[in-house]
Image (cartoon, rainbow over all chains, first blue to last red; front, top):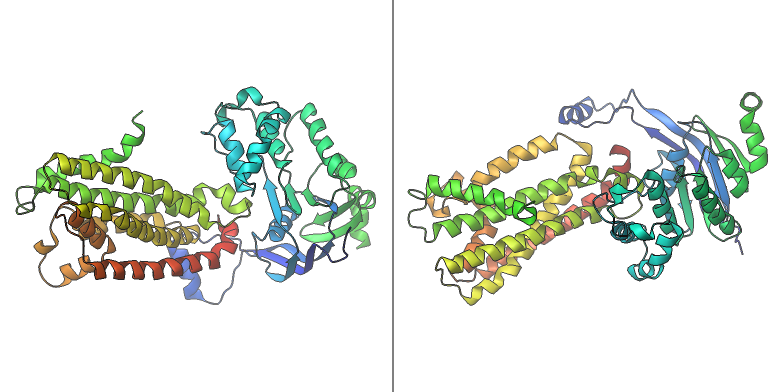
Length: 251
Length: 229
């Protein structure tokens, strides 16, 4: 089933950001006039990351805020370019950040299903085919014609996630995407992930939810201040993560 | 409340004001001066509002620009196309008013969709360049505002091109693509004549090249948009 060629390959990847965003004309000019290229605010969000992800891997991405989880996902997605190093991707992918990115408050729930689906590469006919089921799963059938802004954040999460289940791609990059919602919703989405556990799709999921990582991800990546601290079996990595001092000293 | 009518309100107010101010002198010798003004205003306001809206689209749809994987030029193209519908409706109003006020319409009116196409190309490449630039330089809002003010006067909206003295003034207007487009529309609606074909083909060719160039440029910078929005 799985060929051994990695579906995601990072080779010595580093990513630096400029500390100042040059948004004013005068600043842009100054940059070119000074021309020595010095950039005092520059900092590295990721340093020398080497990584091989195999097809079908379900990987949790853990680490404190600012550790580089989102940067790693965005580099994989091609939304950032690496400052150094090389990234090879062998498949189609989707990045999901936040709940319902691209949905429009002023449109109805039904219109948003189409909009959201199309943004994430679903064909119109496929959306049509799953339309009723999407509403049913999200328990939103009676809200189909309501404007999106009248929905609570939990309802939005249900709507977005319900449609996400039908997205068809090789690699899913999730960034704390569904951290909202009540206990019932959580049970429902855990059920969906459980059914995916042995599938051929590859998941890279940034999360602070260690229980979720244990439940769904066989492997875990731990990032700390832009460095890869550990990558391997979830239980082992979590043990290191929970006793961080130990791990940092050992390194 | 007014919905679609809002898009006509601005040109109509401008039309009223300009007609009162200019019809006695600048409008002398121009038949159907009100329609003449209306055509110029409709095309100018479409150009300025559409490019302005598209310039901001990558930032106003920040979450899509920075978090979704798809060709970002679609955001700009979508914004431009949404505004073309208004231009189309406004031009239908122009032609209707022309007919009502006694203009002798000819078959040349059917060349208007071609003028739309030319205007669409112009708006599209300008929008692609502006939206790309705006990601990196937010001051563009003010620079472009000043530019469109100047453009209002450099486009023969309330005066005839022949009104200008030979020299710099004529040269500036000749360089202004919008001046040519407004001329094309007036020719087919008011004069009942097709515009010079070679001129429109040259216009098409130049704008096609610029459109191609702007798409190239946009794609070149697209991979770093997410870092700057």
